[in-house]
Image (cartoon, rainbow, N blue to C red; front, side, top):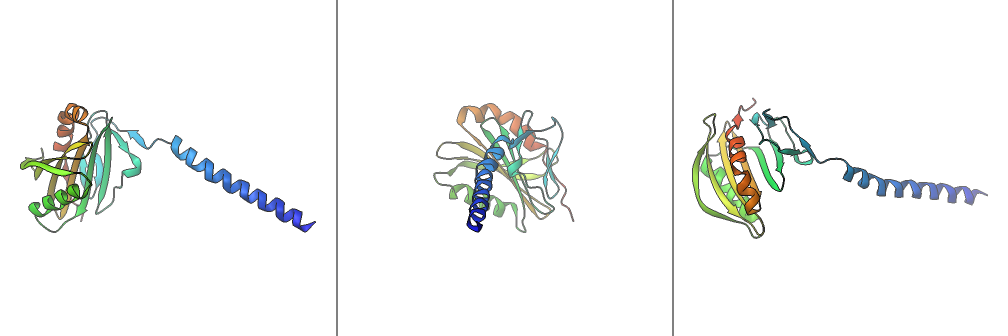
Length: 182
């Protein structure tokens, strides 16, 4: 009689495990990974870095990680991706730009294109901007260094979609403000 109880208990546990294994991924797929943002409202990326996302952008909540000394955010404009990454950095702007170029070229099939240009946010934060191309996407990048932080901004998409979004993206990036937290 005892082995029947063991069998019933084992089957119940196996059924529960199967329900969890199949049910949780299905539930996860149904939850939205991207959420709309309030138009015109600054978003805190992390470490005191804020920007006003482009109108109509969605925030990929699975990739948003605001923290006291670091931060990441991924904004989606249809197929166009705007990523902002904030990290502590103790060197100058040229070193930060070299680090970002290295990250870009480390991606299979990606290369930096053209010459970097000086850039300045509306708050007066200086940076360097450039372009890159990958296997199936093109993009732009910007790097800023202020208050012991490097702020890396990349935007990428397919040619037509990216070109259609660049004015909105540039307007958003120009709103970047950095108030490092102590």
